[in-house]
Length: 509
Image 1 (cartoon, rainbow, N blue to C red):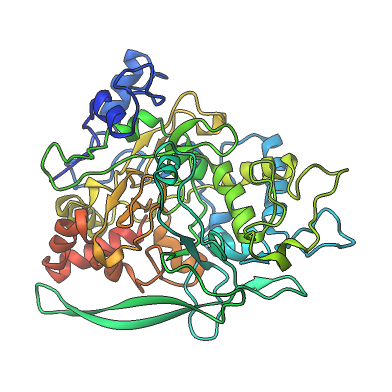
Image 2 (cartoon, one colour; image 1 turned 180 degrees about the vertical axis):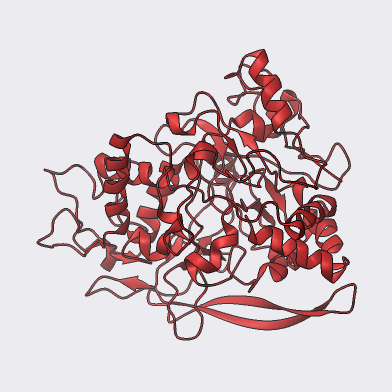
């Protein structure tokens, strides 16, 4: 069994890797947990050690989100519950944030001045449109639209100066010169949408060790009906479905040292796994921080993730992303000529600080549902297969959050997200060939697995991976390559009974 989350990469190695002098005072991220005394450190180390006993459930394993876990009835609304341990006053803040998360923005000018400013180019009219029921998005199927899926656009650095901007974390990449950083398939009245996303699938049979044949669908992405001229020849298209929203505040509360300690960018231990931390700039302050949100961990905080979605997905400005015309490029003159929705009496942006604060609080406090069937013998067997196959090498089961977390509800909680929140090379099959900050075109953040067992209940589908190409969990595992190739092969060569048990374990999360 391979585990990685007890290893510590020397501070000097991380500092050199990311361009800082190999001195503690120059490296902006903590090497060790500075929020704990010696007694607490020993407790945390003991409780987060990987188990080797699969005869029974671990203590507190049912409570995936610690004291914040919701025990609400499992139904379509189970991802929309608040953290169980927030205060009564915070419940009001959560509900106000929920209302803003669900509200539809409208084009300017409008009689509802607090809601106008949509677009002018956009992918969705509300946060809820992509994260329906606070769950996972999906690719367009049949006649359905692509509201919960979009294409990121980026070109590589072309000059030493552009390369330096990426190396200094000033930017994560460069947008298409016409269509910007995101391809928008909707527009306000009087304006043409940028075009449409096209997906062509090819079925790809894969034979497992016991002769079972599984068909994987391999997508090819393109754009049609371009309204503003050709796209750049070096622009890459990266499809993204909306992530589920649960547990984000708890992920934010994981001490950075616990994530950094798992990094092994040069594969020093020779296990074939070389996770790298995503180092990014905070959107508001420019501070160097650890990225942990988004498919390539390009955002350091829930607020950064929220402001980026407001701007790119809906075309709504905020103090963190103050462009009132969203992702409209300088060459899209008709877009820039449209009115915006900023109201002087309400603030300098279309979603001023009160809006951002409420939506951020809501997003930070969507509770993780309790685990199911943790004592089921087949689930326990599947958990053992998960560990023995090497899945836990990247899908780190558990952490104890920081005592210094901003919200008391997130402090010092034993949580079970099943992710190391590092970047990993996932092989050619999943590569999008698009750089996002320090992440190259083969790397993706390890996706947290908590709550994924309820995808069908909440979202009404079973599409997984960054673009929803996998139609079930088996397909998702078989798409793993690169650093995950050995774990994928162990699953593919396992007996049907073991494969079924592993899937049942995943369904219990």
